[in-house]
Length: 264
Image (cartoon, rainbow, N blue to C red; front, side, top):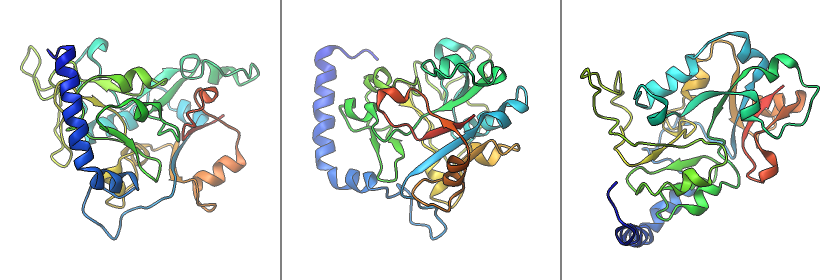
C-alpha cells in the first residue's frame, strides 16, 4: 500500500481516536443491532450458527451453486488467479479443513471429499483481538463483522485467523483485466464494492438477515446441505440437527469456538 512503519502507526493512531469518538455507534453494532434501517421482517437470533451436511454436499459432484450465489450477491471479484484470489466461501480438501480430526474410522468417502468452508464466526475470534482500528468486531448475536472503511490493510486479522477465512484485495476489485473485462462480472448495486488494500470475508449475510432473508448460500443450495439458525432456540432446525447427528468443527483445540458445524 506504500505506507511505511511511521505512517502506519500514524494512521492506526488516528483511526483509534476516530474509533473512540464513534464508540457509541460501534457499541450499538456490537450489541447485534443491524447497520441497516429497522425492518419488521428482519430475522433476529441470540447466537447464529451454520450447519453443513457433508453427506448431502458431496452427493452433488462439482456443485458450486452456493459459492456463485454468495460471490455474486456480495460483489466478490474474480481476478483469475489463485495468488490474488478473494473468497468468502470455497471448498477445501477434508484433510486441509480438519487437520486435527483423529477419528480414523470416519467414512472414507468423506475423508476424500471437498469440504465447504467460510468464516466460522467464532465465539472467541482472534481476528477481533488483533485489529488496531476496530474494523472487525463480533456482534452480540455472534456474527463477526467487517467495516471496510475502517480497514487500513495491516492484515493482522489474516495472520490471526487460523482458518484462512479472510482475503486481502491486492488489486483493485473495481478494475478490469487485460481484456477490459470487469473483475466483478455482474455488480449488485444493493451491496458495496470494496477497494484495493482492504480485507473482506463472509458476514453470514447480515444485510439479508436485516431484510428477513436467509444467507445467500443457504437459499441457493438445492440439496439442503446448509442450515442456518439460532443456536439458543431449542426449536430451531440447527439445534435439532446437532442433537440428532454427530458433528465436528474445524480446529476445536484452538479454543476459538467456531459456530460452523459439520454433520458427518
